[in-house]
Image (cartoon, rainbow, N blue to C red; front, side, top):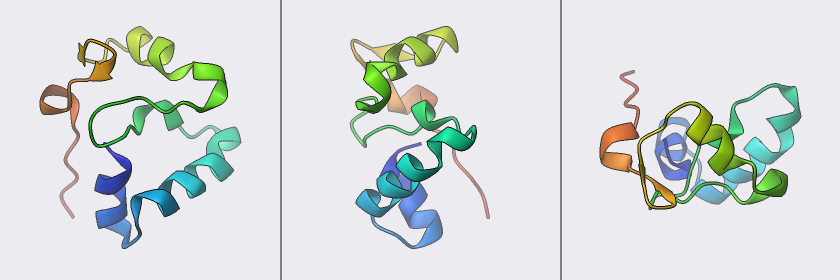
Length: 76
């Protein structure tokens, strides 16, 4: 999911979602699974996101998550 996808669900902007994710990352939240709308992984945590995504076999297109194959849809 992208920061914007989560923002739509909770009524916040993508930057607000990013800030919240940064604050709770230490609490076991899988922060690397939330990416920019173009599939670019988060740049925080010393650039660990691409490695973690690869370990989970996340579909990639170059250095970006292939959003057409990897995007999760939450029905509420």
